[in-house]
Image (cartoon, rainbow, N blue to C red; front, side, top):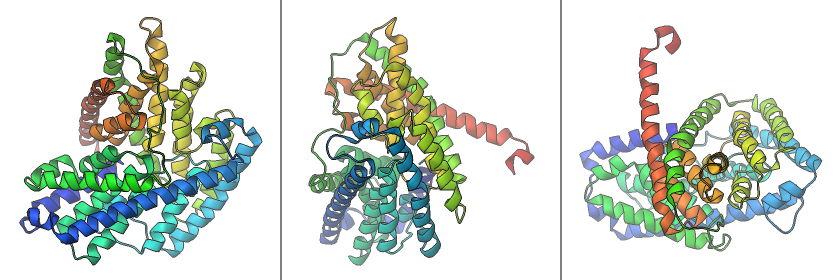
Length: 449
């Protein structure tokens, strides 16, 4: 995500610097743009709904349950069932991905789509469908990458057919990527901020001057429309239910601690995912790398069933306080390992929910560690940990904060605490990034080769 965000910012800065692209408000208020934006919102919503139905159907078939949640299913199903499901998924998913990557074009990321790369929608649909199936079969990686990519490409195709200019088309692609995220998680504000902070970039948005407000409103409208359409499959409620309690000084202290402590771990987790992703197999080697990695994942899932899937099951149980402290402490390590195995195997997807769930586990452990001195509401500290870890992993504090609030339906009184936690992460991440740059500059030439 860090590399993707940097690529988007660099491309967007170049776009903003071209005087010919400063087309003013007229380009964003035409009937063409209205039609393109409305179409993008509807298509992103339908994509989110379709992927949600698909995910649920495959989860039910793979883990043999008809009622209840995925979290309940993976913890109740016999260990050998979990093991065999993930083991079988490895070679099957590897074979399909190998075929797609060998026969088809390279699948562009949302950053690539923003930069103008295009492929046939059929190839994108096949790849993103496989991303969702991989998560449903136990792959420990986020499912939000699929609707972001598919939604962005669909918006790009619609915008091009309607003859939108370069700048309006790029903005539409950015908004559609955010709308894909909004649709699949029922987070319209989170999708909006994702489009503005990560896809377009706040500095670039500011450089658009009088267009900035209109772009913001378009991002919000497209995300809201996509979310409303996706509700044919996704319930209109927060992803996680929490029994909120009143605020006190101990929670303020937890927010101050979560930012630098949990956020720092999130920062390095994001770095590690990027490095492991660079080592993922690019050709025929996926045919053995993925089965081996998924065998290890299956073994890890025997004692830790909640590591399977994107992390929703783990976060759900943690925020309901259904996970014993000892298990939560072990899951702090087990979930990142599962995600790194999945990435190393060659799977593609997102890291939003894996980061969120790992942060919730760290918040649970932090609350328990401080309980002997300051009794606190464990689930509320878990939310602070989730927001801080996500902010460090994505390097996007506004997006992380809004998502932590929206996914949990946080009480407005809790919002300042989440903001405090992600602000601490943001400050710490800036320092860590600067330190990393200084170290790279002082390395001897051999180390830089």
